[in-house]
Image (cartoon, rainbow, N blue to C red; front, top):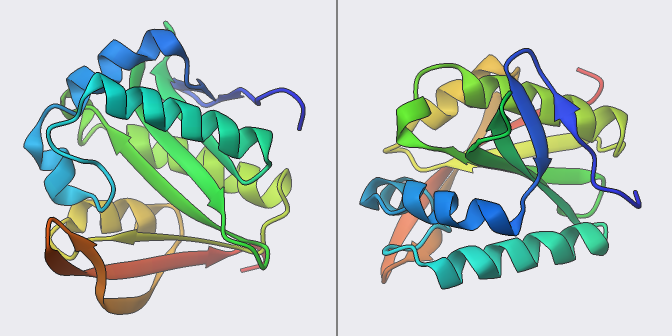
Length: 176
């Protein structure tokens, strides 16, 4: 794809991250809970972290290895992010976060359904998977709501801040 896609759902616009989003991203990710609930968000989260993430997201798109979308309300205000990253063999990893003020409103589920459809229909993936820490069952509920099934418990799969953590893996197949 030459230009970054824009996806629309009933309540959301999913579009490429932009420089103007950085202050909002930094603001949302200041809360320690994001670091505690994810394997790849540092604490404290700085403007430099956000700039690096935007650069990596753009490079992934340019090299056709990933799509990171800003989750926006209909006014265009960023409220979170969601992405699909190619892991070879026609499979991709789904990841997401959303600002705390928007938790428990179904936004991530709505965005994730659109991204999974995009991954299967436009990018022709066979399998899309996602992981979450066992201490973040809300993320697993989102995965179940979009049709993913629990596939595995990956023992001590990630090391973060000097500690090993298990991950629960969910997946969905294109033709199931």
